[in-house]
Length: 252
Image 1 (cartoon, rainbow, N blue to C red):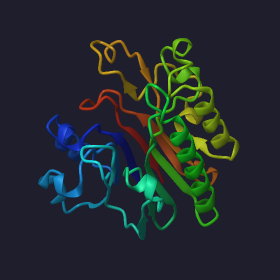
Image 2 (cartoon, helix red, strand yellow):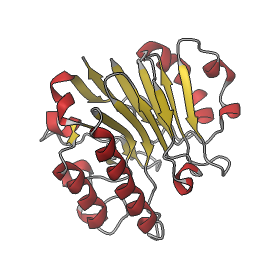
Image 3 (cartoon, one colour):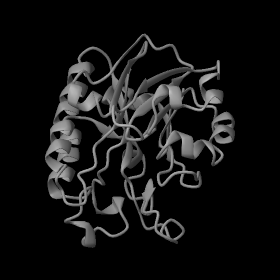
Image 4 (cartoon, rainbow, N blue to C red):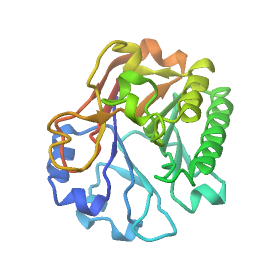
């Protein structure tokens, strides 16, 4: 089973930048999108009419903002949102139950340049971890999406100059420490502990992506029970169309 996650920075925008061709070629079993910036009725009709996939949405109340969507060829037994109005109004979470595991498609809040959203982000993080730990009592869990946090210095090009930037604040990074302490596995870093220059987001400023001055802020975290089933976990930096690139997890 091949699962891909991608913050597309607007489904209508990325659709015009080769998304349909890429989607057809890659042909994942499940595709998790974040920051779709659209309601279901604003999705390109060709995507909605793709009979290979069932589509699930959690769109923000605010137009053109946030939102997640999941395309699945695998049988989804049940789907819920976060079930907290504050988060569901921003379209941040889809919780899917499959036969062998739960899959969470999540778009974590950005702390904002002036840090005013950091408390909201940290409360969201705590609530998501609680949800993950609760679900794992039933069956294994995979969580994927844009976490909006780089964990350690290897996960961004300029760690020294970003210690006071949201996305690399000590308390944001400590939450990922806590995630790992609770047993969750950052599967890419587990497989490639020393790989440098492995980023998933780049500033849209000119030449930044070409020079690979990026951040790794998109993840797959998995339950330890799933570790033996992992065939590969990759970052797909050459896929353009968004300021993020897709990430991939393949499991047996």
